[in-house]
Length: 221
Length: 233
Image (cartoon, rainbow over all chains, first blue to last red; front, side):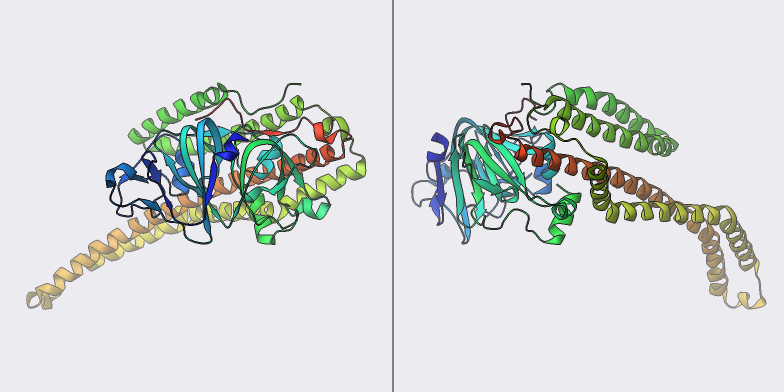
């Protein structure tokens, strides 16, 4: 539960005074002039290249002086969930990453469990260490922590933005041969976790998705 | 119960070093002797495809072997002839739209490559001979008018040179087109292998999940997706 308590969701501009120097996605964050850097150049190379996160913008909140507070801009409907890690590990989708502090370490997990491999990529990006990491979500996110319980929450896999490395997911797919042939989307059952961050728009039932999306899912997990 | 938690930390090196080191050496050799590149592509790509398909198969096999708990496919799924047929049809239906497309591209590429090879062997030689002959005739053409118009003579000679080069340029162009189609053939082959593996994998995972949900103690089922893998990069 501690990790959940150390998670703050911002819907408006927020001050990053007191943050360590951080690496932000280019075009986002307060420093638009560009102080380009390639941190941890051998970490998550492929995923970072594909999502345009290889070269990042280094923002140092301390370099501005105390005259004006340095704000991180948040544009609606976007929200930024800031998670403070204390020697913990957080898995996330690279496209959702907004920034991470300099002391954190990016790495990749290889998960070849067949149910996961069938619906998702085996390569999962992870950030570990002590510091703050910003996760970008469209709309108000669901931040939850779950202990082993009979009524575990269901979240569509594609809405998952970040989850702690101690998470245990079960997977659920809609029954029926039509859903088998036309690759039905899967939902994650959060069996236990310190933190799961997901997009809130989770109303769609498991098994409903556009044909193009299903066809695409068969080719690219 | 022992669970499958991803590949062991030393597995990637075991796989990558025997494949990677010869690849780098062959690449270096190919930069010195360009002919080696063709041999590497001809032998290496099919070998790599088979190796990747084999590794994927081993992963699935390992998963099935180590997850023999309640709700797992091997223990609870006893397919009858009818359900086996339905399974096969489902995999085939998933595979069919892209699998047949990949096969068509594969076949069409083969036809195009053969056609180009025939052109290179038969037609282009004659064309080259024709252009060379024409170039020679144009280059050697002389007329009393050239005394007064030397520019015309120069223009004719440069045209002759261009004609001579035309045959060679066309030959090289067709070689490049042929090479592109050969590469595309391999790409469609890799796509076909991937798609077949993906269809089987998806159906297999789906069976596991369905059986898991039908198991009496579904809540305590051992199949949980974990993220505390040892191997990180």
